Length: 75
Image 1: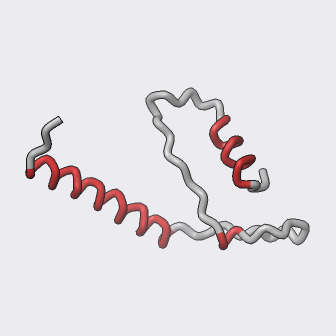
Image 2 (image 1 turned 60 degrees about the vertical axis):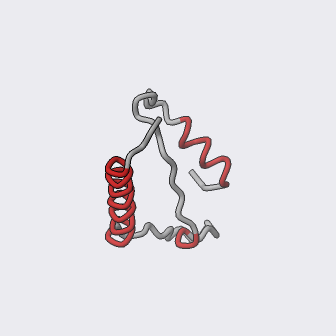
């Protein structure tokens, strides 16, 4: 696939806008802090996230469970 300068700049701008949106969303959304005294997990030390192809997603939630098991995150 041949990419010319105009298309490269368009795609770069889209990526930068997406990154800026995620950065500002991180600042605006309050963080969840676990108040349960029985859990020793500090939610402020980690930020977990993943990307889902919504065209292939069937809504089963298995990806969420797999992520929690892989990263030892409580349910």
